[in-house]
Length: 182
Image 1 (tube, rainbow, N blue to C red):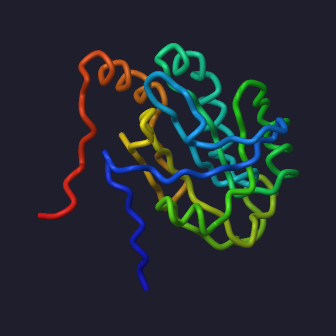
Image 2: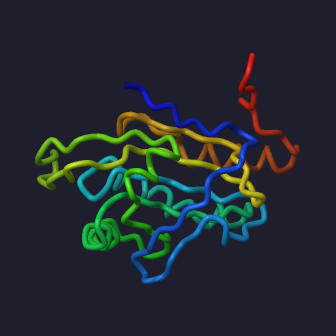
């Protein structure tokens, strides 16, 4: 059975809430960013590719802020595993959310995988977890851009995303891929 959960550009992105490792709560509808909110979903502590990807996001966080873009990264990990990721990956400035319900992840269009035991870095995969994806959401909560993956490999480059946002803002470039019915 195939479940299609696609959110098209220019459509309303569903509101959701997650706890943050820093003790706060993050809610999409509460974000007040000038240009966009960048919501980055990662696989979890067990993923060595995620550690590098999220570290790169943190490195570019200031640039996104200068562009009027707020950033959050979220997984379906437990609080303990998310806290360990913050410590091990040295995520001292990023908002790191955890406990994303798999039903919520799937409703946002993310893929869900089954755990396969220990990863290459010796950390057990959870029984089920969400695969990576990210969404660029406008202040009115409409979807501007998304990238949803079934694998941890070959993710969009945050440097290129920042450059694209500069172009988008300077040229009032519209969200594309909005056609639903042909």
